[in-house]
Image 1: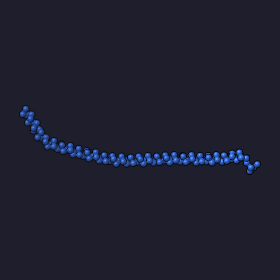
Image 2 (image 1 turned 180 degrees about the vertical axis):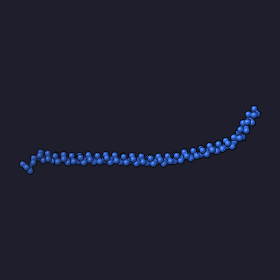
Image 3 (image 1 turned 30 degrees about the vertical axis):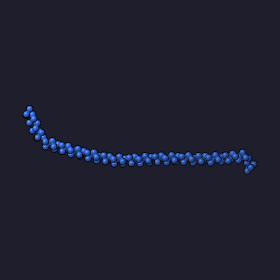
Image 4 (image 1 turned 135 degrees about the horizontal axis):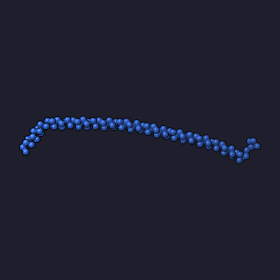
Length: 106
């Protein structure tokens, strides 16, 4: 009987061959899926890292601008306060004289 297999035996052999091929294809597909998941995770990690770096650079640049504005406002306020104090000092003698005159005449 050696080479003369029955139709049933031929079908079983073909089924076994197809099952082996199916297992190999399933393993290849599983590996592809695992590789794709790893690549997906790597892409997300890279995007997250790049996003954080970009946000940090943007934040730093905007913070510098805001700090410069705050310093300009402080300098302007200090200058205005100095000018007011100078006017107060300049007008103090006249104000004191006027207060004294007003109080003295009442």
